[in-house]
Length: 371
Image (cartoon, rainbow, N blue to C red; front, side, top):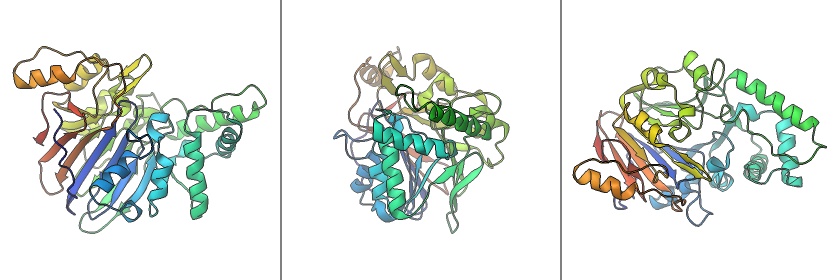
């Protein structure tokens, strides 16, 4: 059951925090890296459909995003990851904007502008992307392009921090450029959606290192093969100096994003796994089998919202009763983004998981202190 709303305290300078927000369709990550610095990965909006969830939380705890947020990352440009991102970036006036190298292409930028002018695409984030480009132009800046093994941001000092991009791979970037070029050449044909590069293979997975602790943010990167997806990351993960204790599970826990080596090569034993569900049309993620698969790898599994395809299972005790109450099959979207918050002192082995606004535990462990 979710905790009462008691999260208004600002984390101390030597504390690491990962907050994951998601209403059932949408995802945003807000990370505190110590020493007053924050970064935001993707965006979803609150129930008023206007305020980015990350900004609402920062306002709640009294943090000024204009000075505190150092990095805003768009992992990819699917609607459920980009809503409100332009407003968020405008508020974070000291932040650097990062997006996938797969979009660093004149053909894509031309298509994006055409889409905004001619309604070439109705619902794939073009308005958000063009608004961000306009803000970058106003600031006389440029995006930092994320690609495999590239440092996106770093800080020294008493609590050193480094943010690495683990994807997209060179192969994915090359194929994306070819795709945009072909679509631009056919722009006189009937209106088309601008395709996101290779489904989710252009997505930016991130390794966040704070002091001696590492966090893996899986975005929507899919398993892939050879030179794409997690297969490429696992074949070339030169940047990974230590295994991660916290894992934002890739692509809503779906089987398409699962590679067993993620859990053995990149994660510590029994990591804290957090995810956002996806419910749209007939697609509901994670599925029952997805959850069972992840539960075999960690007892610490948490979701920002109810899982639509999840059926209550027979267990015992008060935990079982609570789970049966919240795991009722639901076909509607949760309007208020649920919030999973993980906090850890960088010098301590223990951490704490708190659940707010409908966020729930899917694994054997409940919220509270975790090993």
